Length: 74
Image 1 (cartoon, helix red, strand yellow):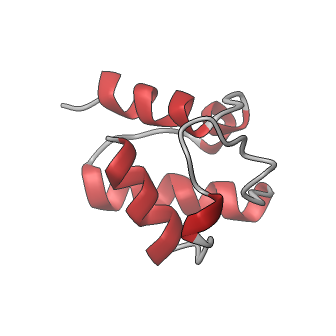
Image 2: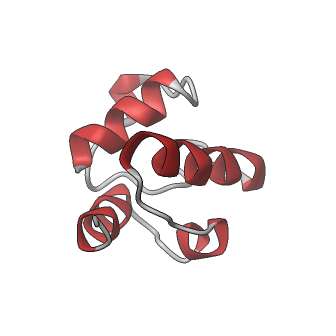
Image 3: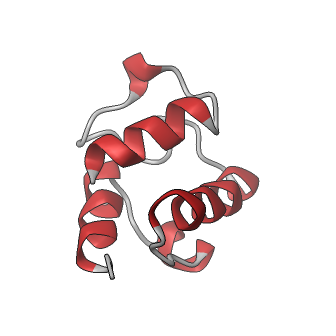
């Protein structure tokens, strides 16, 4: 799931790939409230996984988001 997340961040949110690693924090890659809403929508559209923006705000690292995506695959 991390690769799916990486693609979404690069292609949909235009985050430079060099900033993206499992241990990177959401702050380090520049996610703000608007981009978290966009990320939530893109994750649902691309993977079918529903993660609410509020859930994403509670996740500090990208690996946490990818793990939660994996746990919620239907």
